[in-house]
Amino acid sequence: MNISEQEHIKDIPLSVLEKLKLIEAQSFIKFLERRNIPINKKETKKAEKVSVNRKISALRSLFKYLTTQTENDDGEPYFYRNVMLKIEVNKVKA
Image (tube, rainbow, N blue to C red):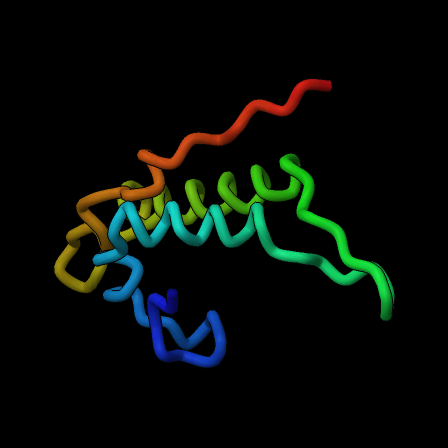
């Protein structure tokens, strides 16, 4: 599932993120959990939970920043809703 037709992350417009649906965010997290990460030419591994949690935390921070800290030219926040608040970070047992 693609949320944008952009080839590079930096080219995704804020409007796409603003309208991001919960199901799209959840699908992205599932993709992160299931994808195979190449170790070498013959081996792959699944992402560790701590690695997925870091990505979730980064997205949560970005969305918090765009809803609470930034303003557009009219003095309004970039986003009025933060879909990432609905995505939980899975605790990792040490």
